Structures are given as structure tokens and as C-alpha cells.
Length: 206
Image (tube, rainbow, N blue to C red):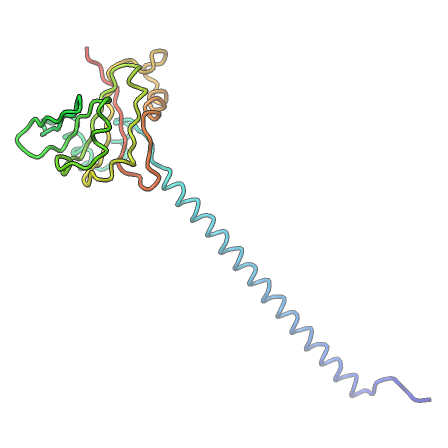
């Protein structure tokens, strides 16, 4: 009867091949695992970048003047104060008419709510406008909508400024969140940019 047991040398060679195959599969497995980790890491970073991008696009909101100036430089704060309170050349738009007060090119556009459509088309008078001011005088004014996506032709526009001259939140006159919520409903934001900054201020006429 023939002996079918492998010879000693054949057995050693087989063990070497087995160990070689094991090392190969171990390295292959580690390579696959490493690749999976890299893919997972890449997907995770992609998701984070997408989320940050989306949050940036959607970050445009309404803010009170007082809160806004707390987070900007002294220089910008002074420039904003000059636009809001200074005697600067102004373009008044009302009843579909245009009137400039001042001796230079206007940097403020004071727009009546019922004339908002007049600022959605390009006009040479808008060339240096940095701030658009609207006045919200009563509850009926809250029905108007200003679409910031239609203002791209205002090349130097930085701010939209809503001046509220009535008790917009009569039950909670000092509730900033309530005021912000109501003014926000008047603004339709563009999805393409965070400009202009939309600000509001409740003032007393007394």
C-alpha cells in the first residue's frame, strides 16, 4: 500500500504557502478596511461641508439694530449710525415717484411700502445706494413683502432697515423675538447670498 502522507519537505512547503496566503489575505483585509475608513471619512467630511454650506446660504435673518452693532467693528458701527441718523443725500420713492433730497448722489433709498415694485428694476439713481429704508407704521403694513432676491442691481447695497413706528407687539412691547418674528415675515430672502443685512428698530414718535 502506498503511503499518501506528504513528505516532510512537502509539508513544510505547504505550511509556507499557507502562511504566505494568510499574510496576503491579512494585508488585503487591512487594505480594504483602510479604504473603507477613508471612504467613510470622506463621506463624513462631505456631509459636514454640505451642512455648513447650507447653513451659510440659509443664515440670512432679520436682526435688531441694537443686537447687530454688538457684533460688528467700531468702524462699521459708525458707518451704520451715519446711514441711520446722519443727514445724507436720500432718494425718496413714493406713489411711484422719485425725489432726491441732498446735493450728491443718494446713498439711502427711503421706499414707501406700496412702491416696493419700483426698486425691483435697475435705475441709475440706485448706483450708490447703501441702505434701503422702509417704514412700518401700522399692522396693515405688515402684509407687504420685500424680496431681497430682486435687489441684485443695487451694487453697493449693505442694509435693509425697517423703522417700526407703532406697538408691533402690544402684549409684549419689549419682546425682541416677537418684533423680529413679525418683521421677518415681511422679508423674502434670496437663497444665493447673505446680503444685504436686514435690520429693524422700533422707535417712539412721542
